[in-house]
Length: 609
Ligand code: G6P
Image (cartoon, rainbow, N blue to C red):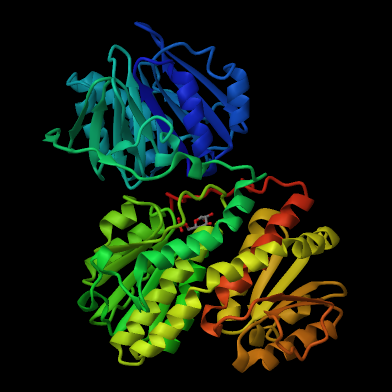
């Protein structure tokens, strides 16, 4: 949700900023802008509406903005429509403070009124312009320098922000952070600022993590950190292990299809990290039996991570017989949730920055629960705030619609379920070893599905004009439908509904018309026939039906199309059944000529509520 970058050093800033913004464009892409300080002179700003390529054109790939210090932004609109005016950077009224911002200033109306009374006039509808003016106000009123002015702003601000600020007459870049991600990269005689590590990997792997409520002065040679009381804070840089190429397309046409193809390795890496022989071993993450043993599990997550949590619920309850509740983080945080004694709260998040999931972790901690994060991005906020973190090994995921990170989350859920089963005395070591052996077959089976992706491509070509799609299933299959439907909606904009097959009759079946495409996901033996009947019910009302089942399974439904995936244990079926549905989303989007990696209105990392 909005990406920010900054550079200060000896090189020309603008091309480096544009390079960084390209890596962050997945965070927002309705407008973009740069501010560069000319040598010994003022700060020039260029902003454009639309994709980043427009800003590159406008600045001749940065050549038109000379200077070795600057900040940049790619926007996902919150306050004010996408327009050149509302794009960042924003300047204060007299132009002496220039700001890029990620987050939402919640009390911006009240602050805007205050500033209006003080004579400030606003040119945009953004909360960020208010930030620039408020910092300017404190800067001029107290005359105690940039750190003091920003700290005063932080004391007055409600909401979330990652800020990079330039002041006229000051060489350095000033940054501050609360509940929005930001890191500082350290090079030789230069420093980088970014919302996310991939934006600076090309230049350095040494980063400083700036904590919540902290601010920093970033110079060419040094960085100084402060807390909100302006007291210095000591910090060491850490080396990140990400590979720069991991965030490139590597010969694929889009990130989404590249990431779909990376799933065998994602699943394998995540399994390898936590399996030792035929058993699960979380010792690397300091997650021991005492921490995991719980009377109840509550999963909090958003989007696809929530769907991975739904699968975890079915699997864990079956294997361990411990009650598992899955909640949308945005609901959990505000509904005064009841957490029984000895509840373990599991927060699932690819980015580790989703505002609602982070808030849910805080809420759970405040209520005395233990918190375990299942997170993909190292060092992210949720990973740092939860009591323990199980990392998934998906590597950088760039396409807005998640695929490989979701697959890794499923695996983490299976491994946790096996552990809870062991702790509950419901699984013997031999049974666990059998499940583990089956899990180890998943990467190859995913590869096998991907080898037949042309079947899905062909299906997409024939049905790209579909206006309504339904996906029905029961148990784990229902959770696959939820994720499959989300993929199709996100990237192909086709209205798709996921339904628990047994629930269809209670209203939704009235939407089935001649030619409506209905998928029946059918991998769960005990309820196969039930779903088959539900699919038949739609077919007899004109639906065009598609079954998705294990190869070799006898399905008691006359469908128009039969898709299969290799057989696995039913509990792990989501990992295979979801693959054709991800491919379906991808190919439908291509057929419809859409921007598959950057679907309209979406952002990958949702750092606002
Ligand atoms: C956004 C993304 C989804 C993602 C969700 C949760 O909406 O578009 O793909 O599932 O956020 O993100 P997280 O990083 O917490 O997994």
